[in-house]
Length: 193
Image (cartoon, rainbow, N blue to C red; front, side, top):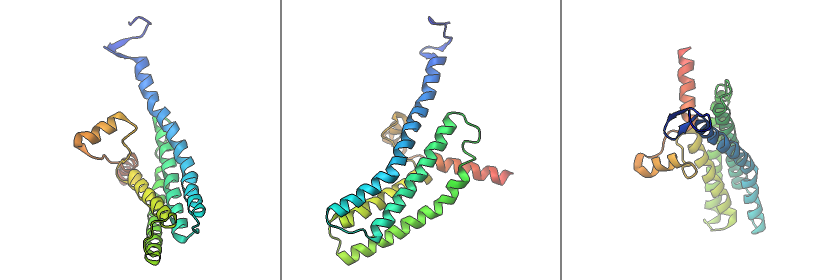
């Protein structure tokens, strides 16, 4: 036994430190899902504000890019809430959400493609001018595509968790996203049933 009645299994390890380490993902995910949900509204609204303030108009490219960005951020919110439930040890935390997230994948792709077509059309008609009218939809589309990759393929976010950052800078590259691994697991289980 340690000094405070804690059973020490190995130097520097105690049940309390193990529990504290288990709470870190819960704290991180609790913050992240709220930020992601807020950004689903805030980022497109900011883009619309900047376009209007600069004298631009709300265009199809802006609307479609804003919808794509918001939709992918909503997907991100669902994923983060799902991973939070998993970190808390809730039963069926993953199984309840994976079918929904699989169904949301194709509408997300369709929104990104529609936004890309609208952006391309707008750029061709305006001559690629560097204005909020053209840049805001392009940035929203870029964010949507990066969110899609981050959730459905490879984890792109590495700056906020030391082990992920170390993996990236060590040259081991990007790892499959949590959602991609959970979808693969879900598909294997469905085939096995």
